[in-house]
Image 1: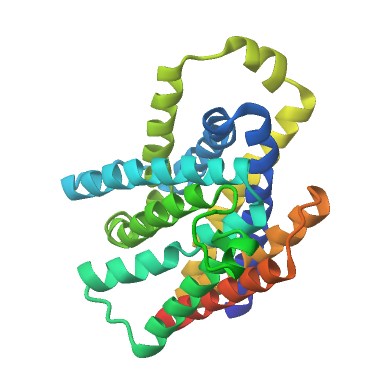
Image 2 (image 1 turned 30 degrees about the vertical axis):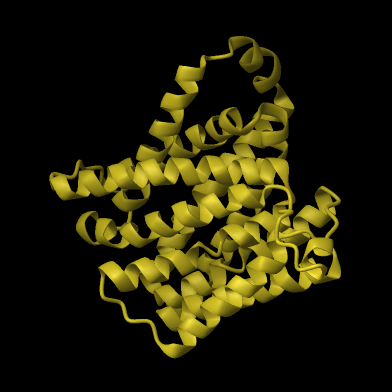
Length: 294
């Protein structure tokens, strides 16, 4: 069972990598808000169908609905900020920064759920923050110790760190109350519903949908984006069910490294040696924090 769990985690890791990669061309073409809707609405439909197959039900606990609402609000803010960070900056750098949300989750879990952090966890958090500092600022600014000029998209990535950190902290009590499959559908339902409400308030651009979205190339890109994000969620859950959570997330957390390589291949992204070191440094320490935290 361990071997199949690792296979599931590896599939989830690759799926997350490709899913994150597809955000760039969608965001560049349609902007943050529209790209988010075009990518994640089909994703939500796939999740709903899967949840129906697994046994659809509606939670009755008011606390669950309250937590889902909190999840939806912070998740929507974090998701839009994440897409914006990729749209305006390098995928490799901002993806690595965004995944530092594990720090916020660890701290909030310690405060609200009594999960005690040991000396090594605090040490790794400091190391991750050091790596994030290297990624966040322009290299010339770092050499001059002038921490004013952020790399493109980094400010949005920091919003993602805070938002993801909060929602990953409250996903555990949600999952304990409604189970693994409901806890992947309902949180995403709330997040996408809030983003969709903002999308409708802005106004539906029918011309864009007809002339730009409903083309073979764009539809294939959206399909790839949605299927990979759906696959990532499902195989993450399947891995957790047969493997230690820490090992599953230790594997999945390596996804940004794969995404960085893919971004360099497909989008010709160029990073400095210092940035490359910082990305690897941050991701390795996040993986360690994830594993020892489990």
